[in-house]
Amino acid sequence: MMIKSTISVFLLAVLVSVGAMAQNARIKIDLDRKIGEIDEKLYGNFVEHLGRCVYGGIYEENSPLSDERGFRKDVLEAVKDLNVTITRYPGGNFVSNYNWKDGIGPKDERPPRMELAWARLETNRFGTNEFMEYAREMGTEPYFSVNMGTGTILEAQQWVEYCNVKEGPYYAELRKKHGYPEPWNITYWSLGNEMDGFWQMGHLNADDYAKKAREAAKLMKLTSPQIKLIAAGSSNYRPNADPNEWNAKILHELRDVVDYLALHMYVGNPSDNYYNYLSTPMVLEERTRVVKGLIDREMENADRGDRDPIYIAWDEYNSWYRARDAETMAGTRALEEHYNLEDALVIAGFLNAFIRNADIVKMANMAQLVNVIAPIFTNEEGLFLQTIYYPLQLFAQNAHGTSLDLFVDCETYATDEFFVGLGESTTKQDAVPFLDVSASVHNGEIIINVVNRHKDKAITTDIISQSGNFDGAIEVLEVNGPTVKAKNDFDKVEVKAVQKESLKAKGSVLTYNFPAHSFTQLRAKIK
Ligand code: AHR
Image 1 (cartoon, rainbow, N blue to C red):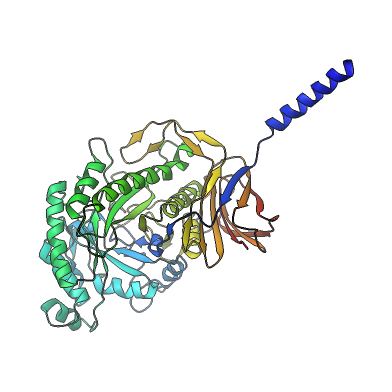
Image 2 (cartoon, rainbow, N blue to C red; image 1 turned 120 degrees about the vertical axis):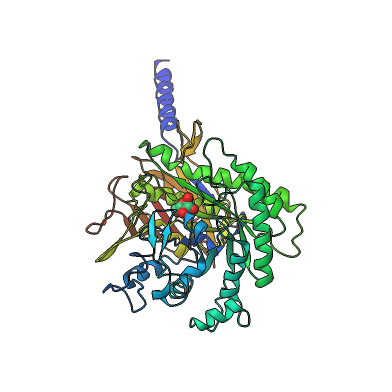
């Protein structure tokens, strides 16, 4: 009797301790569960005439680091490694009071102007043709934004004529006279920037914007029928704004005309709440789903011939919260954020969100390329790569093909502030998974992107293939650093992408311990 009860107590203790042992997290991969094709334009970027993005960034005349055209050679090299597929230009808020005609012709004859968006003198020594030459060097698709603020629909039409018409009319001939006999044939054009924002020069209400954008689109398309147009969707999420009403209205009015709706989002960590900050890409995903619903509704009655449906272009996204007061948002040193590891993890989260929504998000542009809230930071003697450079580089170089719909099972956490952004503060007790995951398959190779949001704990995870056994060595790339506040600088590299020892799976299961506060990219094959 005594022995029997001792055994049952022992068995109970074993069961309790097995139950208490944390189960491995699980990621299941099934090659038949596809979300959509990953558009290469997800790896876009943005060059605005703002602070030192152009002048002192990509372009520095008379610098020993520049070529004869003034292009910084060291910057160009770092840019090329980012595989920037499409680059938006020239703004941003800047474009809403920009006259493109100021930036063409002999440089010494171009008029200097007051730049009102970011309080600078704009010399106009860099303009359309300089940007296009730079874009050719970068190997990027150009994406121009026209001035729908203080600009007219005629100016927009004339810019398209200057860029895309081979010969004949005045502005095509002017381009030839400026030394460019062949048209640039720019496909992507956005109809203004953040026109829903009260801060925008020439800000319009939704009705007036839709009317102006539709007429601009008409003239631009008559000039160059193959162009694709991007409408300005929501950027204003402050109290009193109604971003979805704006999006619904613009989609309804422009559904036959435009090809993309542009959305913007910046996040930050002003209250130093790591876990909350790491959850912010979930807000982007939530907004994406809402806009997808609005698009679906409009596509039912749209008259688009054989054109694709409207897609989402997240054509500005990043972390931006330190350089946000009157002083740091003006002049030649505006918006110079110095990023740390937690910012890099948020960027990896954004990229995961784009991949998971690859069926509807067909363009994304990190804002911006150099110095201004940027992955590359220069001074007159050189540059360093910010922490956010590395996740972008790994995604842009490796995550292509078809996005996969994964099953992910892991522990979650709650945040008291779900999101604190620009004037926006939403309190929600939402469950945030510690593992943020996306995957894609391309030419038989599977890329798995995992952010471990846990600040202190590695998470042991079984990655289970539902489509056969893992085949051969599995490559591991990791972005991490000593603490979540670790930063890079001109004289130190604390955060970078590191190739780890490759792995071997057991049949269809690969078990991996994702380190605390890390982004890991695995490259595997299944047979
Ligand atoms: O990227 C910086 C600024 O952020 C852009 O000029 C504007 O469009 C947005 O508000």
